[in-house]
Amino acid sequence: MQGFILSIQIIKNQDLIVKILTSSQILDLYRFYGVRHSILSVGKKVDFDIQYDGLFMPKMRNILEFGYPWEQDYARTYVWQIFIKLLLDHLRDVSDLDGFYFALLERGAQLLGRQNPMRVALEMSAALIMHEGRNARIHHNRCFLCDEDLSDEIGLGRAFLFAHPKCIGGERFEKVKIFDFLDRCSTLALDDDEVERLWRIFSLGL
Ligand SMILES: [Zn+2]
Image (cartoon, rainbow, N blue to C red; front, side, top):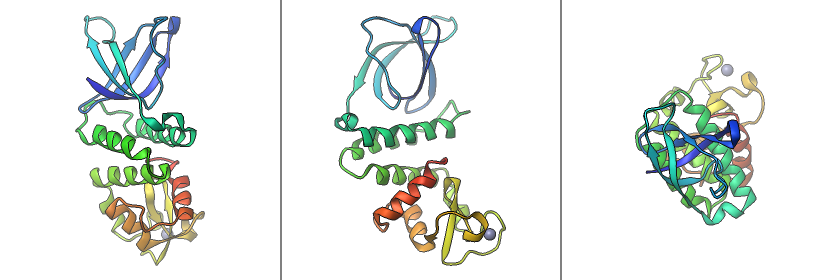
């Protein structure tokens, strides 16, 4: 089975509880400490077996790590781990999943090696918002704080909710550009400064 590691919790004797996102589930698995075991890290893609023995928690065995070339690059790894952390928070109470999330991570991990990592993460988040049907309410063209119509310049809240700049404060964006970004899941129309400013909002939560 394949999956991406969402979190790792160290428990007694350096044993681990590993939370993994697969193409159909989020699993909590037990990993016994072993001197020769490779060191796992958050965000890694792994291949593994599950051993069910009817006790406590299924065990994770025969782990094989997939290495991406960008894993040596601090800036890319940093962005990736932030995305994984936000995804973990977002899927906190979920156990069964459709295949979208695993495919999103696989595709993102491929792109991360050759594109601006913030653009990759933002485009992944736009795809996620669209998949979950949350872009529809954005098109109400209303401020999520006061419910009045928006004008051409907007402010953004967590998960890219639209607001009047005067209601939410902070950064201002051109509404058409943000519509374009969320509709097409593309940052092509955004310059690097806009990407960085969006990234700061993205980091607040999916
Ligand atoms: Zn408002």
